[in-house]
Image (tube, one colour):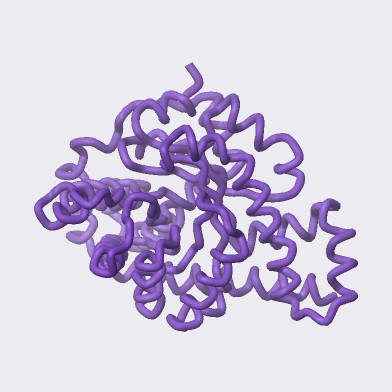
Length: 358
């Protein structure tokens, strides 16, 4: 059986970390039909690559450049129709799954990462512009943007919280989601149709921690390649425990949906590790894994689908304790990587806007 479909049977949904007009032309339909693909994510780097290398944008871009628009307005004029088209291709998946599947994510400007009011205004504007129930607006998990995330949930906007790298991020995002749901409930709003994912980035964690372990040397070297998976498994165990506890009983009774953890940055960066390491090792219920094209193809070809999340929390916490014992500060790692991630998205967005101004 196709491992991608097996993962779905185990409660995980596979999304594609890519969006372009070439993909929309036909490959996306085949991925939905044959592989059970359940969603698509995008980010500034993806759109920068798609627009700069894809001939499908040339005519529209030329026409947009004749109008008195900013580069960011030109970008949205190109991206929003792509997101709408992808949402429409997933419409049957969305309807048949009762709203579990079929989501397409578009990110607010990375320049707003430290501007909560600006983030919320952009989320509302993009949500209205896309006008599809199976869209998701991506909001970064910065301290400044988390109140905007709560407010968006209270508004009934589906949100993909991005750039999470550790347990502290997971705790803060969980709290913000619950707060948003309670705000909506207090205002008499319906919780049943709100969906959200919390995107935890993986390969970058191992890249940084492995470098630190190499510097420490000795027995610490045996822990290389284990930090990201241990962090994710521990986060998942805690996430499930909190959602299914008395803490969230009122929300569950009101029909609220669990915010699913989404594994991101799942393309293996270290050639010494399996190219499906961050897929095989993190399959379980109420999760999503968003895969680059190459990782999706690799998992389809030689992946192994089994529940590798359930019951793994204790062992994962033991690994994290070992990492701490040799001097690895996982909270420090998460903070550094979020800063670096914001800088990378800023750089990609700047390149994208420069392209649209050229």
